[in-house]
Length: 179
Image (cartoon, one colour):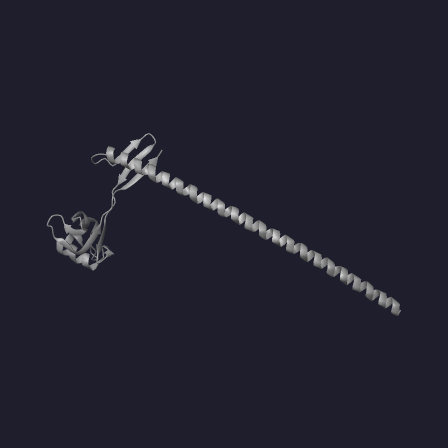
């Protein structure tokens, strides 16, 4: 009986050894597969990085080409749009200028119709420019104002300078519409 138990132990030790050896082999295979997975991941990340670089380069080239063509069209439109006409129709689309509104500032901040300083000024200039809730009729007031080269704002009719107000003017927006 002792021999039988000893043989069983030896067999179980051999089985355990075989299982451990197989587990070790499987673990080595897993490590190899994980390394291949990491290599493939790095490889495809590099390909994606190169594709992103190419896309950015091509996009930048296209942006530069569009900007260049738009500049040429703007020059053409500037030379050929005269008088009050603001649009030039071409077979492939339209070229047009759209008036941009200047931004007015008081104390470095953009003017709003409820700014107390502008409300007082509008009330003194013309009471009808102040609405019931004490806001300036900014849309109408702007039509009565002019801007000098230094950005100072004054009343067109009287030449009165609007205290603390500055304005920044912008060139007209240029728009290209394709058919």
